[in-house]
Length: 255
Ligand SMILES: [Zn+2]
Image 1 (cartoon, rainbow, N blue to C red):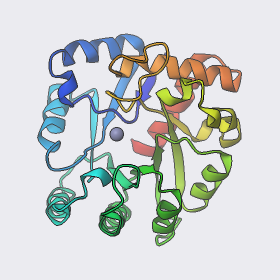
Image 2 (cartoon, rainbow, N blue to C red; image 1 turned 120 degrees about the horizontal axis):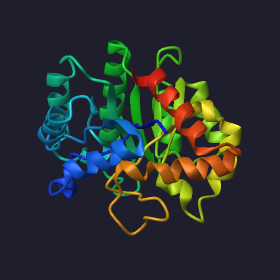
Image 3 (cartoon, rainbow, N blue to C red; image 1 turned 90 degrees about the vertical axis):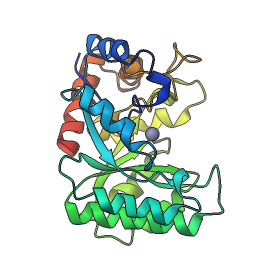
Image 4 (cartoon, rainbow, N blue to C red; image 1 turned 180 degrees about the vertical axis):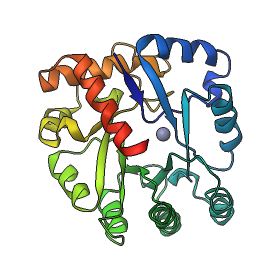
């Protein structure tokens, strides 16, 4: 089995005690590459250190996460501007809009999101989009750009086929599927065949969103085999085919 984890935070302090073992288990499970999304200037050093420790395993993104848009938002945008010209970025992420935790910075969230979308378009980089309880607002921001130049992944996608179609009209978008797909109440999973396996990439969002049967524990890239297994059921394929197809999708988009 060959798997790419397109969205994981293994630089997080939750992995400080046993990161070597986490990477070893991932490789043993077939996860040969992971993509690390940045959150803000505070996560940058840990992300870079993890990349340096496992240079053939990790690729990195640069971005300001929407929940990091607060009173310091201008400083965060300057930090992004100072580093986006550096070589080696796989994508701009994770960026987007989050109205679940805090709505008070919505205008600033939009400004930071669109600033980073513009940078991605200018650099020809894909984006990793975090959109939580902000579908209409996210669509409105994407609409301001040329659909022929926007490409990326809708991270932690849990919308139906209609939402996927709306995103796809606005750019070359893939949909990131992780542990949530294994939860009993995840009705969106039934619509994934309409989205198409050729549009899906796998992701853990570790340490969060652990798939069944490991739910309740810290998530880690090795557990993606459970997500591949769930999608294999949904698509009527074997897990190897799901892993291989989604890895090829990730390579097309990011490599
Ligand atoms: Zn994330």
